[in-house]
Image (cartoon, rainbow, N blue to C red; front, side, top):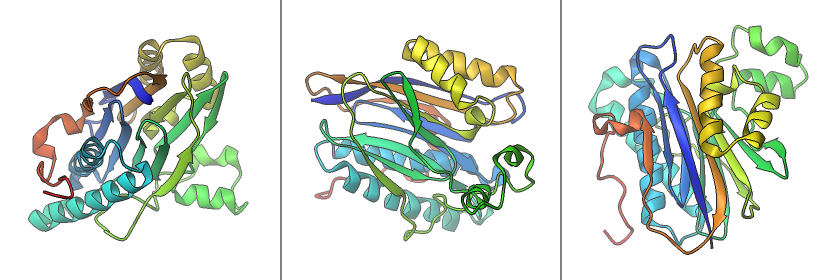
Length: 268
């Protein structure tokens, strides 16, 4: 069977006071969530979403990954809404989410927002996700030149997020992966400062651990104006292992998660 073997780093950057990004890497799930809202508790939105999705995946390791992700995102939406209802000062909190889940054979990617997912296979890097942003809509409609994106005043306007709307689901993309393929998930704190050519060059020349460290260092060297989160994993073949994993960023603090008991098996 196939599984995910990777690492991550989540750095506050050089400008922000706190880290609103969250990430997770385990044998059956990897994800990044970039909180939106600053004072409106972006770190709570990202941590709650990351926890809801990875906990759902860990409880259902042998189920259809698309169904797991669909349900995980639905739970995350419900929990973000519950967080606002419990504390109205959080109104407006939201988060991006880019996640990959596997049952050991099938892989599915879920995406909401402007964090990005990439496949590195055969020495080539391919972007898997489309940004859910106002600027991307303008690009798709031919109303904006790519060279104008960096300076556009609305470049950070995200159109789809985990924001407490239980009916808002993610893009779901089935991935055909084999052993040796690599997946990169990153918040825009990395991809705004490190272009795809440098991503590809760095990853193809280094191990996962070294590549993550080098990419975060590159973003910091260019100003680190946002939180920076980078998740990189290699698909490996081997026996089924325990469904554990590692948390990064805001989700490491359980106080940021609205309800640690929200994810349950269907029989619970």
